[in-house]
Each structure stands twice: as structure tokens, then as C-alpha cells.
Figure 1: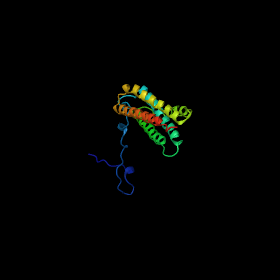
Figure 2 (figure 1 turned 180 degrees about the vertical axis):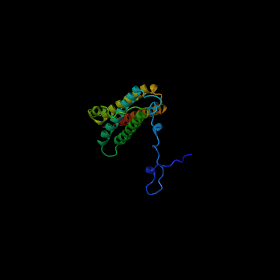
Figure 3 (figure 1 turned 90 degrees about the vertical axis):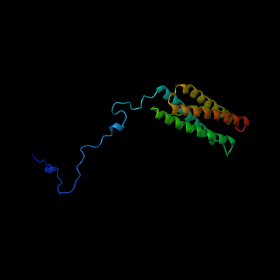
Figure 4 (figure 1 turned 45 degrees about the vertical axis):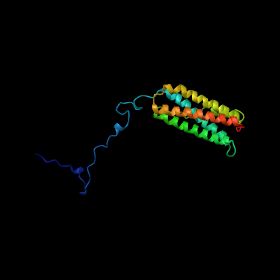
Length: 185
């Protein structure tokens, strides 16, 4: 039997220990969904109507957060109105983040737009009238969530939307209470 030998070109020139090289790097293809033909977006593709409706809510929440920040910043000191607007603004911003993440988790593309609510609210004169308009916007969000909930099968998204609906109802009541005191101008 003939003895095999490494060709001289492959031997180390000065006799140094050299670990044999691998013939190819490890393959990580199995870690990338879609590489072997399965759906890249998870078990099913996102529902385009659901994503569209969630994006409409996202744009409204983003607009609500922006307009509430403007209204809050227009008030001096630590008034009851400023304190309430601070809380509402944080709620709207947090809702926008949750909607953004939910849309992405469901395999959709989250909108980067802001609804026209900002300009519409700022066109209204006086803080009390603006707060009434904000409440109309909050009520619109509640109605849209109520319409949307029966179509949402994802349990995490359902819970998020139910929590958002309750928060908006609480915020509407808080604005109404502030308006009833006359401390909103």
C-alpha cells in the first residue's frame, strides 16, 4: 500500500506547527427564515387591513402626543391642567410606541407619519375648546379600537388594544372633570 503524503507546497516552510485550515466557514443559513423556502414573516403573512388600521391609530397617537405636548408647554407652573396634559401626553406617546412595536411584531411596516390632528387642534381657539377637541380625538380612537378588536386574533395585540381603549376612556373622563372645574381657561 502506498503511503499518502502532504504535497510539499502545503507543508510549512520552516517546520512551524500550523493547524489545518477548514475547507469552508460554518453555514448559518438555517438561522435565516426564508432561506429554505419557509415564510420569512412567521407562520402567516400579516393582514394588510389590520396593519393599515393599526397604522391609522399609530398616526393618531403620535399626533395626540405632539398636540398635548404643545398644549402642556403653553401653560405656566404646576397647574392642574398642565399636570393632566403631562399625563395624557405620556399616555399618547407610550401608546404610539406600543402600536409601532406591535405592527412590526405582526410583520407589518409601521408608518412614520403624524396625523393631521395637530394642525386641527391648534386651529381651535382657547384651552378649554382645544381640550374638548382633544376629547373628540380620544373618543375617535376608542371607537376605532372597538371596531378593530373583533378582527384581531393575536392575543398580545388584543390585550394592548383593550388597555389602550380603557386608558383613553379614563383620559376622556379626566379631561371632562378638569373642564367641569373651569381650570382649563
